[in-house]
Amino acid sequence: MRPGWQNIWDASQVNVIDITAVPNHHHMHQATLNIIGNTPATLNALNAAATPHSVWADGQIKQTKSALAAAFPNDDAWGPAAVVDVCREELPRDTLATVDSGAHRILLSQMWECYAPR
Figure 1 (cartoon, rainbow, N blue to C red):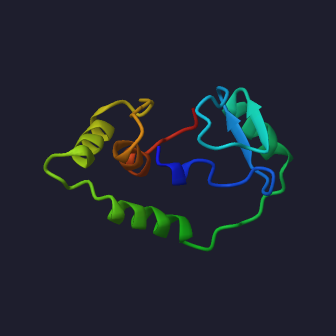
Figure 2 (figure 1 turned 30 degrees about the vertical axis):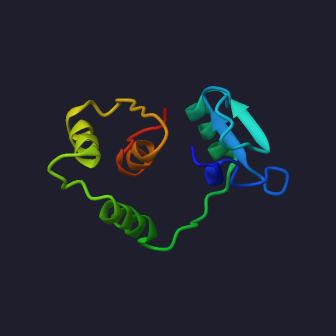
């Protein structure tokens, strides 16, 4: 990982809550509070106690997804983007994908569509 991408915030200056299924052993970022456990159950418990309110302007999520799709097009005939696109189309919806760090990780994180929390 590029040094400028490590610890991009100071967890003592901003509140960062990391909710994960496993402990953070990668040390690429730190959190003010780490919650390790069943991620969907944790989020459901937090959601049950929350008062819902809209935080996104109308259409903002759709516009952001469209901008990402345009920035990382999947129409390459061959190459990393084509591999990610074909895998997402052909593999089951619950497939977990992993890559090493670097450009392929960045590409996968922008192109891989997840349909449910882990």
